[in-house]
Length: 215
Image (cartoon, rainbow, N blue to C red; front, side, top):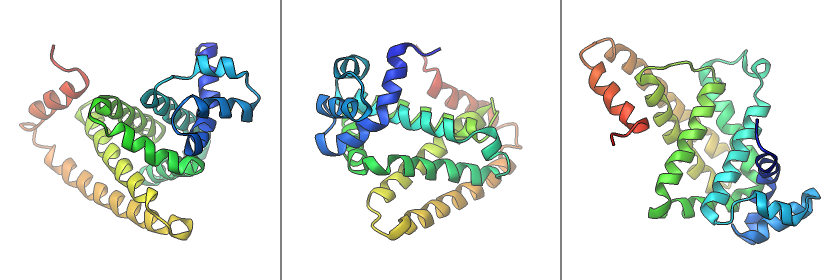
């Protein structure tokens, strides 16, 4: 069960992102979000992180939570896996749209060398949630490879979206479809290639170290 502060942070998250588009990733965005939602600003400041990278992390966690709430099993059951992944990515873009300029600055902040480890954790978390919502239950090396690939697809689509000025984001839509088509081709190749048991141990060890680094 989330703590009261965690619940409040999630309640604030999307509104903070929207206000960060005007105020920047700082305490002003939190105060403005609290005012929008009728929340005590002092409580909001306690609940939300103070530094920009972790404010961004909390905002993206809010996007993750909104996506999880929207994509119920009933809503997603009739879709094929590729359609599920596409729908999940597109929903994220729609959710972030009111904070589009804040998303641009957030990527710049997360790209700073000192923030790259946090950025990687955020990307992995979002990809993991998307795959779980899509119904993935893999526990072997596919668990890791799917999330790595999806992180790349989502990240590149996000960059395309930030520069897309077309109505309805048609360029982003076409870009996402091309990327997903490429992934499907790769998955077919990987399925035939991974049938060779000689390849599996080394890949499993390598991908396992991404999650459990050697001490």
